[in-house]
Length: 306
Image (cartoon, rainbow, N blue to C red; front, side, top):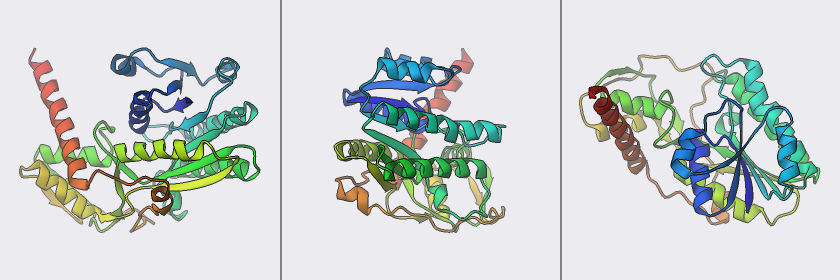
């Protein structure tokens, strides 16, 4: 199977790359010119990569005219000073161009990594540009799939967590602060979220590849989560317990975001019907994150002593 992968340096993309290489699939990475692939090359060896700017995408398809699957995992959350224009380009303009080329070159399957934020009401403005642009591309994919131009599968990913996620993301930030015995101001924590380990999500992508590749043109949607939501408060308290120590959790010290949804869980019936189910429970997943962050903290400490 020949697969084009975007977002390979991201949290989900790197895990998906590892999974696909272990399956002995031929993986071709699509990246920005400025993207540093050195960490991936050091980890996996030689990789084939093409830039997404200028005419490189057209050249890619001239060389690789027999692509089976495109897995689109690249995303821009609109954080860290990213402009709405940059978010729009990464989440909508670039993937629409990729989708257009996929149709032109008769790619069998296009799999889009969507977000559970797209289930929420418009008045929830957190990461608004990100959510809007992701929704627009999902609509483009549905339009093309329903028109019989390609097989487009939309995977709505719920709250991913696991080792290797960005340090500013919710789960690693809470783990790091609990390990440091910090005082942590939080909302009331009554919001419920469907936390799914990244390795379970990657396994779901693999199952979808196998199930959907033989299908004809059309549109299909899957929710990717455990199917069960838990209170954020309970999740954070589990993190504190598993970290040990004396972190202080100040629930209710922060207000909830305006329009924030109170409950979010995946409908996993469709995924389970094609043979997938989650395997990693919350405590096991949290322990993995704790151990990963602890190892890196120790390595950094040893490096600073040299």
